Amino acid sequence: MAKTQRLIEIMMTMNAKRKFTARELAEEFKVSYRTILRDLNELSVMGVPIYSEVGAGGGYYLLQDRMLPPIFFKETEATAMFFAYQSLQFFDSLPFQTETKAALKKFYHYLSEDVKERIDQMRDRVVFWNPTYAQSSHHLEVLLEAAMDQSILTIQYDGKKGITKRRIQPIGLYSYNGFWYCPAYCLQRQAYRLFRADRITQAEISDPDTATLKQIQSQADCEKRAPIQNKSGKDKLRYCSIMDWLINSEQNGKNLVPFVVELTRDGTRQAKSILDLVRVVEERSDGTGWIDTRIPRTEIPFYAELVWNLGMEAMAKEPQELISYVREKITKMAEHYR
Image (cartoon, rainbow, N blue to C red; front, top):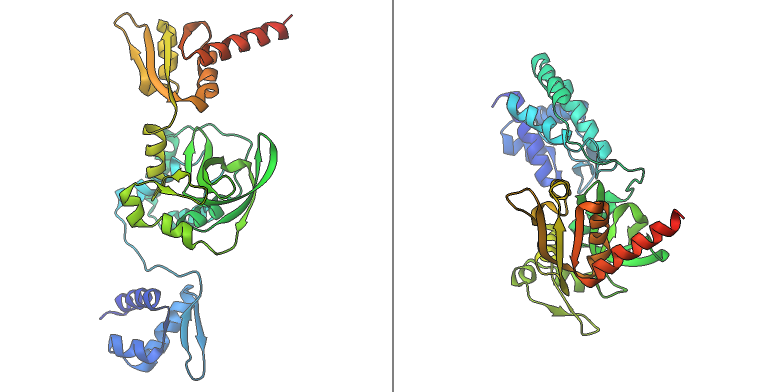
């Protein structure tokens, strides 16, 4: 076996074993003990975080940050990686943002000049525009780690009633219209709640007693999609992924009400450019349009704002709460400009 290939396979073996001895490696790769020692020393010089411990029961360990073996990419695959990152460049906050930039910097450094030029040209020609806001989400990594480990977090949340303390178990993270959101099970409310990540001012791992919630979130439970009961006797749903939660919240919302709006020609065009309306806008042959769908009653204020922003190009028809909301906005605006 060539030396380069052996070094790569030693790295893969170390990543899998975590603890090993030089003699074990020598036997596995059928080389001398001295050769393995030289290989380990060479890997250490290359930056592989190897730690040695002498004495009975000693051996070699990999430190927490494990190193991956070299990976060979085609030119198109290398370009695709930078293309993928390009779609994230206008997010003010990202999980593992520092590590992502560091990894791409290393990756870019070792590319050939013609591939670098190709990537630079792509950066000048493609932009995934996303609204940017002054609010930063400082706890994305903690929220994501808790979702993956199904851990309980203690957070401070800056909501409508001021800063409150909550204990939550995150389902995951999703980005929408420039903001990060974290659906989670709230232990105080005994129900699922949606938290905007930039309004979480503090987040830390809570008590590790998560057996009940882990059981709730188990794969078998997720596959059944059956309601279970919490201590208060109320039903709650199981979610095995963030997509599971998104699909359920979109398709199976409780307490739905009709949402009917008439649109002028220009109103139809504007509504089609609004992310929350584009899928429900219907257009007539003359260019005018309408919306006839159902929304959760709790979302009426949100959709009322969308209708309000369309001005005279939209006329709310249903529900009555929507019409009343728009009328109240008109009254307040008229008083404001007296």
